[in-house]
Image (cartoon, rainbow, N blue to C red):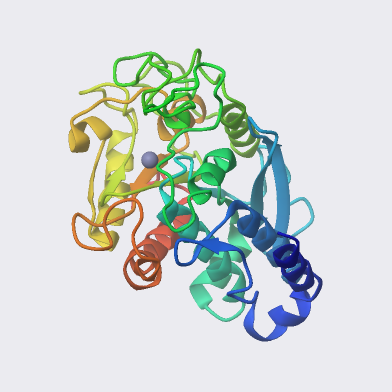
Length: 365
Ligand SMILES: [Zn+2]
């Protein structure tokens, strides 16, 4: 689509100018299904934000997907020398938000887009945003599974229900199955426990081995560079009280705040009380229920993102299931107006809460 590419390039070139008045311009990006942004648009957005806010934004490529698409993140903070480096012992605490690891959960990429705009456009204007941006590194991965999202958006006005990545080397799954590996069952933590499938065409296919997928490996690699390990071995060992950091991975469509452990019913994290207290607060903010996956959903799930970051690094990790229990703003593909009208007003304050917790998440409040 050369015409559209031209538009995006033009916007990038003039991004600084635009930002002086109204931030990065809306409505100039490639969309599908009534307003949802394509992978190309998300990446152009990262470029434009970086150009518009050079003192606040630092772009990162942290790997390549199965189809060799760049895996991209952005670090947002009032930059001092040494900020946004991929080294664990950072001067500032870090809050990592990621979205669309499950491709068809299109609400979540939109939440990440709005979060990026919220932090940059309101710096120096909103006291709370300014304070957070001065004190904390805000890392955002808007599209953790770009290959899967490209499959979803290829449906246009009828988005495809692709959940997993695009790796078809374990089976092509035609005519009824779905190719790929469920990245949220592929992390190197309790991989292979009941609750994920060994069938390559199943929606929860865990992959041939732990962290077999390039997207998973890249996420684990990045997180390992962003956070020091503060937790010893053993499922019930707590992370140290002076742990810094916070991670939220956005999913849809439900209305839940989920935290470790997910891999087994009854398993209790060493930091359960703190994890639960923060989940309760974020549940109160959003109106969502909270608990571990076995508690809330009645299933177990090994190899999930939040189990991995807590297991390997001691950092509190949460899944937000963004959505509604019923009505037009429920399910995977709500009308685009639901993002502004229903989901964002709930998610924005919960993300602000989470970001503020990154400095000392396990400190009793
Ligand atoms: Zn999901």
